[in-house]
Image (cartoon, rainbow, N blue to C red; front, side, top):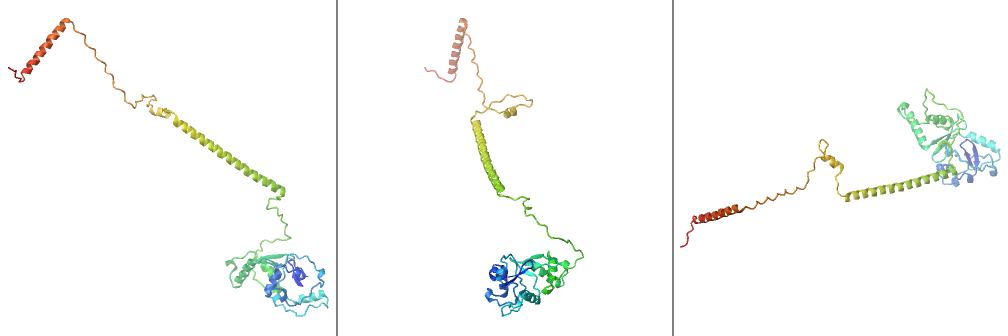
Amino acid sequence: MFEVQWKAGDVTWLPFDQVDHLGALRDYLDVLGIDDISGLTDGNEVSVSTDVSNIDSHVFLGAMGLGWPDHISRPHNPSPPSTSTSPATSSTKTMSSNPLPTPLFRAQNGVFIMADRYRPGVSLAITLDQLRLYLQYDADLRSGTAPNTIITPIGYDDFAVALNSNAGAGVQVAIVQEGDEGVRITGPPTPRDPREDAGGQWLDSRRSELLDHALWDNLERNKKQRIWRNKSVAKRQAKRRRREDDEAMRPFAPSTSLTNALAGPSGLNNPITPSIPPPPPITPVPDLPAPPVDGEDEEMDDDRAEERAQGKGKGKGLGRIPKK
């Protein structure tokens, strides 16, 4: 039988087969330095109910009280627990004679639970990293460091008040007194609706199916639009290429811009100088003289005969020697 103290503060007795799955039991055995329960000696506690069949079998998430100095140094009685006296009376007497355990109970995954004596039913959850920060801050304060020169970890005040309220635990931390009490929250916590993060609506199966259809329809629509756009671009490019080819095969004709560039300053068209030189002008054939009459013909014959005679005389004067 094991005495189990739950997070709410209740103390119950459970057999080993109902607590062997709890991580707190493994931590308890690790602290004692043993592998299984066969290495445990008989305890000095007496269960409230000796009938195992009457013990509540519903084991919820809890933590076994692991007081660091108390449970390890607790003296073990080699004799089995006696049932001659009243269980309730014996348990009350025995528990009252033991010192109060440390109010830190290890739950799981490095989380510790600590009850707040000033607020009944309220427990504080502290991680291992937070606990290290708190103890380091306490060590800095005890060494004489001014509080305004170091960073105060959040939640240290609540931790210090809850821990120092257990005076019998033997563990105390330093508390920084402040003039302003700050924010003080009274009353039970307000229940929080888990649907607030989702906009106040649950995503049921029907809405999930509608959302799935809308998503795929949108993807299909985008795909069709992309295909249609690619076809339109290809058609425009092919049409532009055909137009360019037709213009390249068309005979040359001066464009309007070229005609305007050749226009004069007055806006009138000047004659365009041809690039090929013009052909030479055609010279007309001179008219032949009219034939002479009879008298003129005889005079021309006499003149020609005289010219021939003169020519012969000139030839003799050039040094020709006539033959004898």
